[in-house]
Amino acid sequence: MTKGKLSDRQRRMLDFIRHFSDENGYPPSIRDIGKAVGISSTSVVNYNLNRLVEEGYLRRDQNVSRGIRLSEKLTRATQQVVDTLRIPLVGRIFASEPVPLPSTDSLMFGVDEAIEITRDMIPSSGEGLFALEVKGDSMIDAMINDGDIVVMKQDLEWRNGDMVAVWLVDREETTLKHIYREGNRIRLQPANPTMPPIYINDPKNLQVQGKVMLVVRQLQ
Amino acid sequence: MTKGKLSDRQRRMLDFIRHFSDENGYPPSIRDIGKAVGISSTSVVNYNLNRLVEEGYLRRDQNVSRGIRLSEKLTRATQQVVDTLRIPLVGRIFASEPVPLPSTDSLMFGVDEAIEITRDMIPSSGEGLFALEVKGDSMIDAMINDGDIVVMKQDLEWRNGDMVAVWLVDREETTLKHIYREGNRIRLQPANPTMPPIYINDPKNLQVQGKVMLVVRQLQ
DNA sequence: ATTCTATGGGAACATCCGTTCTATGTCAAG
DNA sequence: CTTGACATAGAACGGATGTTCCCATAGAAT
Image (tube, rainbow over the protein chains, first blue to last red):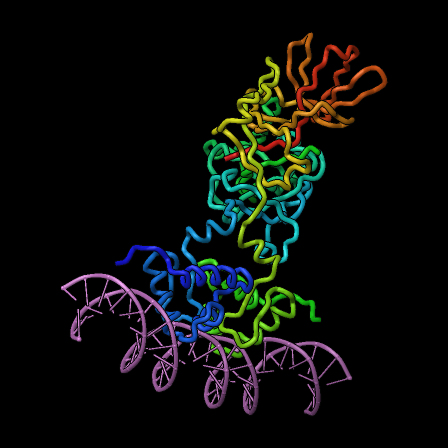
């Protein structure tokens, strides 16, 4: 195994592959590469591609057109990799209405409105996250202000102490509270320690709509 | 231009294209898509791809295998190349102490403790930013909780309505309040609208130590 | 000189893959 | 009912593309 330096050709091939992929959104074919680097024979391109695979510069998928992918090191060096999450901003949250949940539409497509946060802000996987803008002063007992952005996770599971968005059926009201299961009843505790809790005895009266993961307040 | 809604199929196709590209480094072929979405006919896949092009969701290159590329909006959701700011976490903020300001040391040298935020969260240049962790319940009148992270800007300038960190000399107390100049006196207004303001008549009694740009609360 | 190995070239081949054509079904408008 | 736009299916065609085989060249090792 010649674990050696790359030939000039191979260097130009790598360069072209990167450039081409960047330009077109898909990798070049063998003949594309040959034309760009000045190799008339597809077998020679194929040969050098295999050499590059051996050297660890790229991976190939057999019998797949354009089945070339640059190795991690190379893509790293090229594109700036920042671990961020793009979270769709699916609506506003009012006390008088249930929380607008993300539709499949808004999750996948044309959401112009979104917030971008670094991944280390949220420990979990990033699945099922969506963001809401808080309107009005009704959430001040959750220490959340008008204009704040709440990042929530659509998740049926919750544990004691989680802050969740709940819809109180009989009051027709959405609130953000810390939730605790206490025997047969459920305690909803405001984040503001000076405010009293709410107790829910009938589980049907309470719909947990999401778990609050992050609150962001932009002041300027 | 038929600017209509996407069918469920088309939605799944887009979803698959994104996942496949992400997974393999190159786009799927028509038959790949068909198999994944459950379409036996290549012409139907082709038909729907063309619809998606019309709707602006992707671009195609004719007669090129895997010549599919997601449109800008969609790729943005996939790849995350974002401008981020690394802000040093220089200390904790107590009500009983002045705000710890960043020393030249901490600015120059590797502060392991830092938070990373996307640049769009803070409109200004990013100069003079530093972060503090709030300890204790003393900032609840600013709607800021124990454990919250406050991103501040070291800045002598402030304008009416800014939220600032001030050191009240006679009270020996740090608070976060909205600040207003009212004639000869200064009004410090809690963010919580239910709480009363403080009035400062002697300017020497007040030291503005920074302007609050962002508040982040991680719940989980 | 001979042999071996690495590299390059050309052509044939098989398959991959986009394109196109025809047929079918649905549904709302006329 | 008829018509036309729209969506789906299947099949066939042809170009795109990876693979393979044979041969040539150059340089190093024997």
